[in-house]
Length: 430
Image 1 (spheres, rainbow, N blue to C red):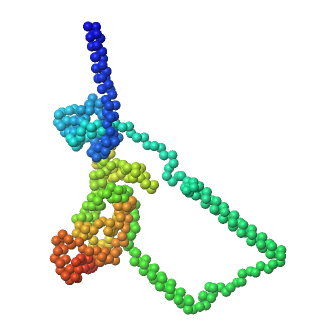
Image 2: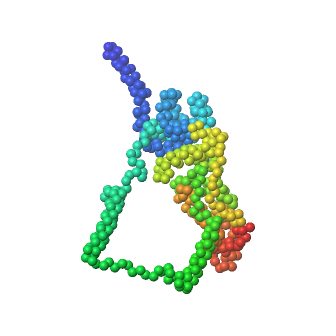
Image 3: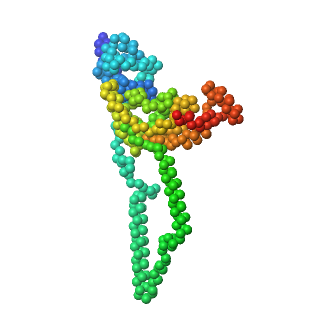
C-alpha cells in the first residue's frame, strides 16, 4: 500500500512535467521543420500578398505563430485550418478570423488545401527565423586603390615614370649645355640653322594652287552644309530624363515582361500609347523595393526604391495602409519617338499584321537602362525596310488574293512590302 501511495504522486508529477514540456518547448520542437523548403513554398505561394516584415495585401508574417499564440491564444491547429481554408474558418464565426478579415477590407485569402502538415511546418519555420542583420561594408566601391597583378598601385608606377622622364629631360638639358661650353672653350663654331624662304609666301605666289584650294574648300563646305541640313529633325540617340526613372533593362530584360503588356494599344491602334500608372500598380502594389542584386554602381538600391515611392506619390498609394488616398499627381512623361505630322504610321499594322518585333524599330530595349531613340526614323530608313522585308502572308486571309496575283506578276514566292505598294507616296503621306 505504501508503495502504491508513493507511485501515484510520482506518476502525476511525470505527467505534469511532460505537459509542461509540450507547452513551453513546442516552438523548439517545431524547429525540426526545414526553413529552406519553407522559403521556397512561401515565395511560390505566399509572397504575392505577404512579406515577412511589412504589411501588404495581408499582414506581415515574421513570428506569426508566436504572436498568435501569445496575443490571441491560437495554436497550430487553428493555423492549419486557416491556411487550408480561411473562408470556412470565417463562416464558423471565429472571432479573430472575422476581425482580421474586416481589418483587411474583406480581402479573401487563397485556400491551400494541398498543403500537408509538413509543408505548413516548413513555412512557419521560415517565418520564425530572425531577421538577417546587414553586414557592414568597410570598403566602398571605387575607393580601393587600383593595383596591378603584382600588388603595386598604378598611381605609384605612373609617378615613378613621371619622375624618370623629368630626370631624362634634365639630363639632356645639362648635356646640351656642357657640349656648348666645350665648343666655346675650344673655339668650335656652331653652325646655326639656315633660314629658308617662307612656304606661305611661295604658296601665295602660285595662282594654280590658290585656285585648286579655293575649289576644294567650296566643295567641302557645300558637302558639310548639306549634311548638316539633312540631319535637321533627326533625333537618333535622343535620351531625355524622365520624371520617374523607368528601367527597361530590369522590366523587359531581367524580368522578361512582354512589351505589349504595358504598351497594349500597339496591337490594335495607330499609337503604342503610354501605359497608365494603374498598369504599373498591378505589380508595384506588392513590389515596394528592388532586390539588392539589381543595384549597380550608377544606380543604387536606394535610388530605385526612391523611384518606386515617386510612383506611389503619383497614384496616391499609401504603402503603410495598403490603400489609395485619392490624392494623385500627373506625371509629365517626355516623348522620345516622334514622327512628323505629315507621315502616317500605324503600330497595329506592323505589330499585329506584319508580326514585327518591337526591337526591329526600337532597338534592344531589354538592354536599355534609360530609353533612347535607337533608329533614325527617316524616310530612307523606312523605305529600305519596305524593300528588304517580306510580307507575312501565311495564315493571313487579307493577303491571299493579292499575294496570288502579285506572285504571278513578279514570278516570286515571297513578296516584299515594296512589291505590294509599300513605296507609294500615298501609303505614308496624306
